[in-house]
Length: 305
Image 1 (spheres, rainbow, N blue to C red):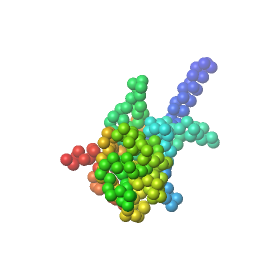
Image 2: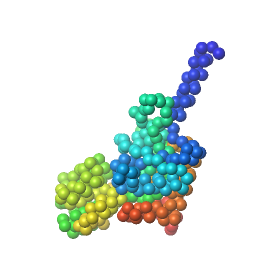
Image 3: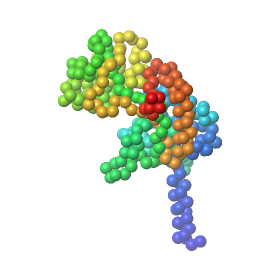
Image 4: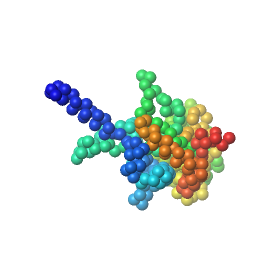
């Protein structure tokens, strides 16, 4: 073999090897290994967080139930949010983060999840394209809707009699997570008339702490976050608003999972487990155990009609 041909063979072999380094695993590999790695967001109660030195939360419990049904061990893969969901999917499902290197073994697999939780189950998002007409999410498959999320206001009943409309926040301060959809909504809706009363916090938990400290009279966040925060406050003065959100657009959305597009068999197996959990009531029991309201994803609401 001449040197030129030998060099080409070496390059092709290396390229083939390196292309596999950032892959998750096929269904058979997951079963043979005896464990499944579930990707959940770090420090994101009530969905996924550390409690008494152990992973806890809704998504962790759902992940453990999936692992148990597949007959493998559960392993957590903590996700640190990047700038947007496309980045999170790239870094944790199909490619891996460019800074995620193993200095001792450069050829080691990237640290990515077999399955990522808390991904929108939305056809428009799945087939979203960029400014050049290219698909943004063609490297992943989104599947397995397991609950429906929505926005929720909680308020201090010693400061407000009720919240039947967001118009009250022209006069009462409300806390929101910075750079969130509620933050954008409350600072722009109705000609910006609620802007001056909208206070920005690092996250929903910090906004609720602001209400406890009487910095604001209400908070707006995801329903499950609000349920969790009210329950853990153990104070009857905090109530749930019954208002809607005019001009906000989508106010409810389904939450599902994602796998790399080449691992559809794993997605089918996990999706079957999730469907069984929903139909036999196990999913609702997990939410209820944490004091949270559960709403069926749209797919199952249509089935029950």
